[in-house]
Image (cartoon, rainbow, N blue to C red; front, top):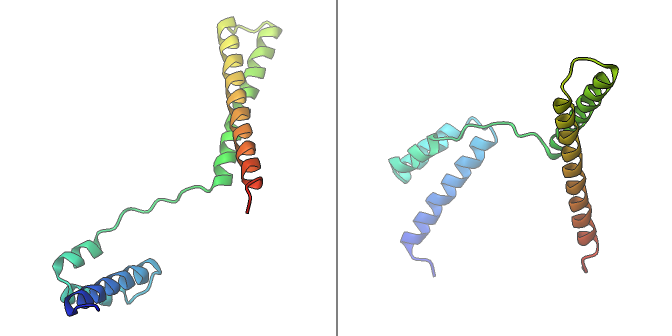
Length: 130
């Protein structure tokens, strides 16, 4: 059985959860719920209710992968341009050309390794017994 003290604390916790849900849903009754909770639970719950973490929009996985692939492509294109410019005889130090080519090679290899790991994980998941 639940004793009366536990039941009242459970009820106040449920009211707190409902007020958080209404606030997250953008409901206008969130302020009223906070006032009700503040009187039933105490000022600590009301203070916890008003403190919010700043919201920042996170890019989704597809956008992140697309951005990273675009960066790798930009590094490769830049290395190709530097190599072409050096071959045409423009005033570009050979060390810059070699460094650019190495950066492009490393970024491509890292991307290839990530792709291989993702494919391996996908294959492992697909081969799991159900």
